[in-house]
Image 1 (cartoon, rainbow, N blue to C red):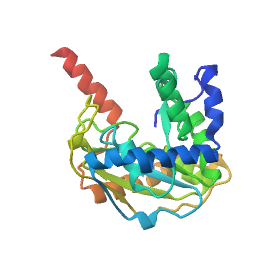
Image 2: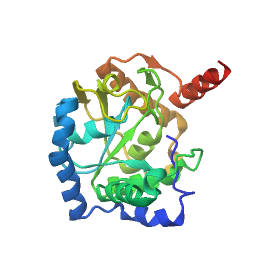
Image 3: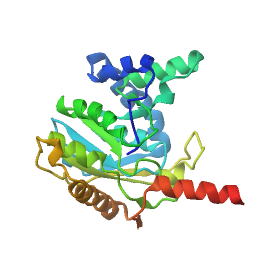
Image 4: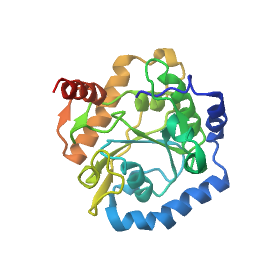
Length: 257
């Protein structure tokens, strides 16, 4: 997972501090999901399986595959509880009326800004996600770290596993199906069709109170368990390589041609 808040501009740290969800946040979130979400439903016709696997209360990590931009609409449209997501910092830095609206919209519905430059500083973003979970809320993450370049399922990043070990919150593996066929790269408005979110059985881990005891081997073991659960539900071909690396290789090959 390539996120970090360490290098955010000072103007955005105030937005990060708004992780605590107010009643106003909840009202706006559900207004958009239940109200304006009707428009989205008419196009992507979302359905869900396994909703009973989502805890009715308490923190949990919604860990999904990532096929298209509309994945982040499909999950709220099919989940009975509010989900918090990270949003790239650029969403909060826009100028003019459009930029201000984007910033207001993302802040209002509980999205917090993160710099996606990556590296070891990604632990900074996890601290904010941990606060969300410890407040008994849902945190959503795409375990591959980026959209799949070709529809296959790629190696998962270990951020979700670390959060589970540090908080004791369960991981709910989620298979997103059908969104890639409706929205290709660069397409803003998705085509009409059917989409589905399958919520798998929770993966429970014992909380580790001393973070120094969390090993890379344990993180990888849990992450692979989540990824394999998603693979089983989605039917995707699995590639044991990070999607970001594949995307960069594809970009370099295009430049050569």
